[in-house]
Length: 190
Image 1 (tube, rainbow, N blue to C red):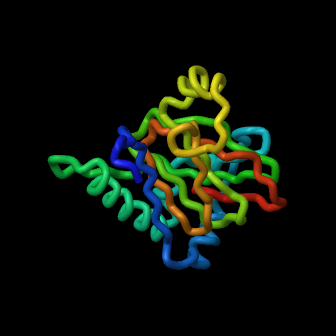
Image 2: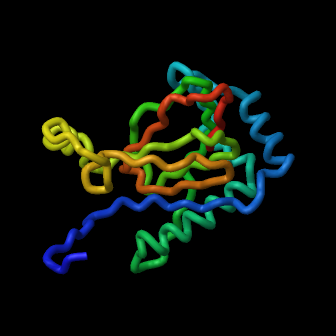
């Protein structure tokens, strides 16, 4: 490595990942079935969302506690507030994505921290996050310079595996999406 130059990464976007040590129990699996039976509505061509946007208020108590534990750790390690602040989950819902289904690129303007938990997944399942200046970068740079190989400096997005029992927490302003599922199973996320 040469000492002639340095490359510094500034203003990184945190994506926090925690894995639940065990599968959801039979009670929670039943509660997921109940949420689906209580009603889901079409959200996109092949994706559906629970009618309730507050599923943690009445169901999935252990999963809610797991999420709250990691939200508190996210706040401590990433936001590092000077004063004690109490963060809480304002909304929670269940998504079903059918084979071939996808979720459009979006962000959550009504929150500070967003998250997704995967009670089930397939090996090819992923979530995609977009560099905050991706649209500008794509317009100014990526359309005029063809990269020989993608890296953290010239890419405008990054993929993370949507593995079973994984929780991702991230700033709500960070755009994210799900590409079309390439397998024949319906994916559930919360």
